[in-house]
Structures are given as structure tokens and as C-alpha cells.
Image 1: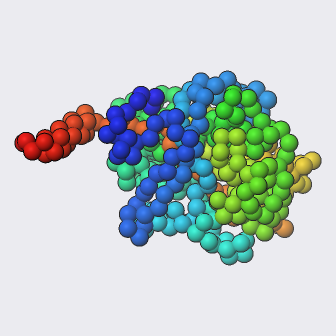
Image 2 (image 1 turned 180 degrees about the vertical axis):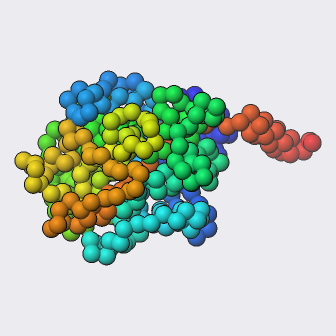
Length: 335
């Protein structure tokens, strides 16, 4: 990822790992859409030993994390382009089903289906393994098998953010320090219904989530909505061990309808010390937070990470070289 690519490859849209903001395109025609990613640098950073779990947030590589949560419009277009059949929660009672609203009510397995399509539609390896519609671990005989993470194929480009990847993007700072909240500060963000002012977040019993691009101030790395708006599913199981396949997944970050019955402050839902909650992978059941508050489906979403940029094949390099040679010869009138 840190190698300098030839100028010809950069002209085709390849981005270096040092890029701060990367825009990726998916689909085509009426189903075309883009996703913005923020580069999370400082590889091999020291873990945070003040949050939860402890330690947390150490990532050995540079990666790109979605600047925003996945939107309803992005799911709609992926559904249409790939016949994915992903369902979303009807948010008519909680601010509406606008295309730029976060995609809520998506089960973990549906999130993996979406991410797999992002990969395969671009010619990359699927991140998560399904056989006969059943989610499975990658095996040692599979290309891209990683013994340290048997859930994720190492040759995939797009993934659901792991616990450490998500944590670093939310609470990390480019200089290696850590913050208590995903706004680059140890002070709780101000609760708002929407907006982009620094030091704000969408939480504290709002009427519904904000648009993904108006979900409060940015983290130190430049992501939005990792505190509040909607809870976000992580790739990592709640116990931190990536097997077996039936384990509950964690989710973090708080949401627009934080309820503080068991907390001294509603902002604690957003803090680095709040270690998500287990979420059922097997049957996708999601219980209401409280009889007086919206069901959990209305406040659960996810974001995508991009963990690698596979180098182009030798054949592509040769083709680019020949194209350049032919172009030069045509300009000089020789073939």
C-alpha cells in the first residue's frame, strides 16, 4: 500500500495510502453512486489503554474508513444493481426515509452482503464467505486466508470496520494520542438534531437520525457520525475473537435516541469507555431499548472500511506500457 504507483496508474484512479480523502465509485447508470473515505494513517500505533476494551485501537496498517455512515440511497442502488434484497427499517415515524438518511435496520449478514457486492462489482475478492447461503469462516485452503482473522479475506478491499479500525477512526488522533469522544476531545459533544459544527453530535433523544452528511462535527481523522446518529455494527465479535461464525457482533457509538436510565450522562454512550453491546448474528433479533422509545432497528447502521488497494496485475502494467509506446509512436508518425 505504501509503494509509489506509476503515474499511468494514478491517472486511472488509483490512490496512494497518503491521500486524506478518497472517493470511490460503484454501480453504473441510474444505479451509480459514490462513497467517501478518510485515510487513517499512523500505522503500528500504540493502543489506547484507557478505553474499552483495553487495549484498543492499535492498527498495523494504513487504511481508509468511510467518512459517513452507509445511506439508504446507497443500499437502494446496490440492491437494484446487484439484486441483493437487503431490507431496511421503515423510518416514517422517525424523520422519514430520505435517501441521505443512514441505512437502519440492517442485520450483520446483510451488511456483509452489501460489502461483498462492493468488492465483487469492482473485480475484487469478496470479504466474507458464504456457502449455500450460510456464513462460514475462510479455511487454510482458501486464497486470502488469514489465521489471525478467519472472518475476513485478506485479498478483499472493502470490509465492515473491525473493532480496532472503528475505534482508531473515532477516538484516535493523527499524532498518536487518544480522545474520550469521537470529536477529538475529552469533553462530551453538544447534542444537536443535525448540523456539522465542531464538537457536536446527534444524540439525546432526538426525533430521528440526521442525514449522514449532517450528523455532527468530525473526528480528529475526519469521520462524521461515529458518535451519535446511529449505532454502528463492527466486524469483530463481542468477545474479540474472530470465530466461530455464530458469535454476537459488537456495535458502538451511540445513536439519536440515547436513553440514559442506567447512565450518569447520555454522552457516555458515545465515549471510548462504552464497549458496545452484543448483537445477535444468528437470527438478527433486535429488541426495543424501552417501551417508551423507538425499537432498536431504527437506530442501528454501519460504515464501510477500505483496508487495502490491491496492486494491478502484471498484465495491466504491460498493457499500460504498450499503450504508452503506441501513443508515442503515433505522435512521431511511426508504427
